[in-house]
Image (cartoon, rainbow, N blue to C red; front, side):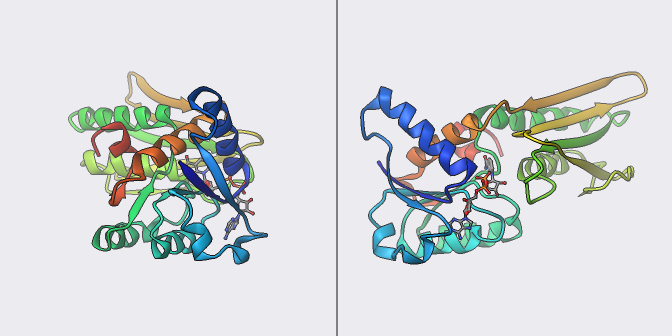
Length: 247
Ligand SMILES: NC(=O)c1ccc[n+]([C@@H]2O[C@H](COP(=O)([O-])OP(=O)(O)OC[C@H]3O[C@@H](n4cnc5c(N)ncnc54)[C@H](O)[C@@H]3O)[C@@H](O)[C@H]2O)c1
């Protein structure tokens, strides 16, 4: 499978490394990273060059993701997107992909563990809807270079809670606690790949759901899995589709 990496920073490099590790088991060129695109060569890569790959994997930044997704749509190349912080345009791009037979998969977090955490979070919120004595708060901790807050992962988990918990109507990203608002606290600390908490607390006890990423390997492996899953499909998908989870 020929892959273009769009964005060759921490994540692009981690995906390349995992692809090479997997090739050692699956066969020399199972994941053939045949095109690497970053800011310094982006302008020299033509649509025809991009069309040589089976799938593109995009991990750049909140400001460049949408332009890169549209570029892949225009070239008719399936695109797996990990960049976060641009999701106000997600629905529009999903609708475009469905209406125009493009292949698009976005996940705010590609780690299998986080997607299990999302599934448990949805289940827990559904149960907690009957138990008003519990208030809920979320917290995310990431490395200091992270550009967006709250993290795409925290936002995804928060929207899943808001869909299921009638007593919360919106989220906020400050520490002010209000009864009908789901607060997401964002902290930035050196060298933290990503930690997410969902905490339900009553006067008598506390239930915490925590996911801690030890490194970037989980995101990279999940992105490759998603790329393989997407390459022959049309439409707009998420990691829940890859793993067969609820939405
Ligand atoms: N979905 C997930 O599982 C997941 C996991 C980790 C990070 N992320 C997100 O992925 C994005 C990238 O993360 P990172 O840690 O690799 O960042 P990074 O800053 O280390 O790397 C980004 C790379 O993109 C390049 N770039 C910028 N503009 C570009 C353009 N127009 N075309 C091509 N390349 C361009 C930069 O030069 C840089 O090398 C961020 O938005 C981050 O929040 C998502």
